[in-house]
Length: 129
Image 1 (cartoon, helix red, strand yellow):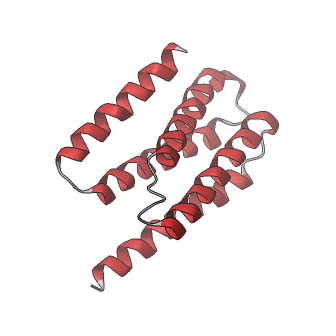
Image 2 (cartoon, helix red, strand yellow):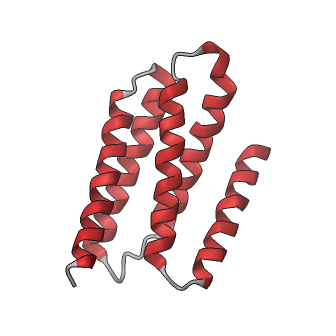
């Protein structure tokens, strides 16, 4: 529980510092980048007995980030986008749990690819404006 609170405080502090820059897209990108790094560490440590604690740490961190991303979605302003992102984050959560329980990494890799695609497409459309 202590690690959960530590991770939660870290992301709250990150969010506060990013909010000061008044760029909500930068906040989300930063958190998604951290999520992808944590998910990758879960994948690389899966099946390695000596890295159980390491894996558990990044599994927990990933779930905290997903929870934070889900709870900060604005369904009033961007109903369709918020719903799609919520589904994507939920898919990430489900695949991480499956990976942690069953040591199946393919779903987490798909989830990471989906995150990458969403944020690349978002960047491309922003650059076209």
